[in-house]
Image (cartoon, rainbow, N blue to C red; front, side, top):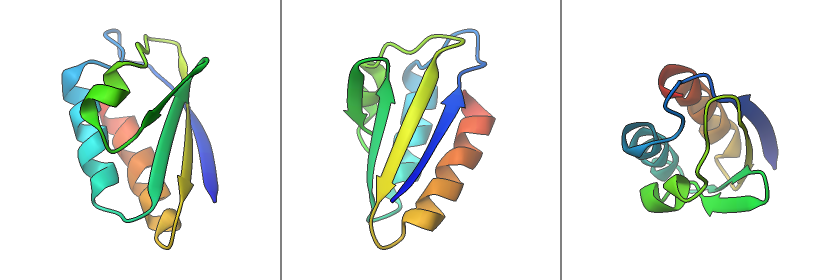
Length: 85
């Protein structure tokens, strides 16, 4: 299992575009991806689920990745976070 946190720096937080890019990155791997913000948790492979987190600038996202390709998935998701949120 791999875990990391990321603090949102985008002034708009998680909206459709970054949620879509994160979900697309997560779907490239077989590992399960769970993303939490506060007391909410979402399937990181589903755009709408990510948007229900209602994450804003300054909020911390916690990622939990489990599966055969978890190392590669975690690296890709961390890179994607830095690019879009």
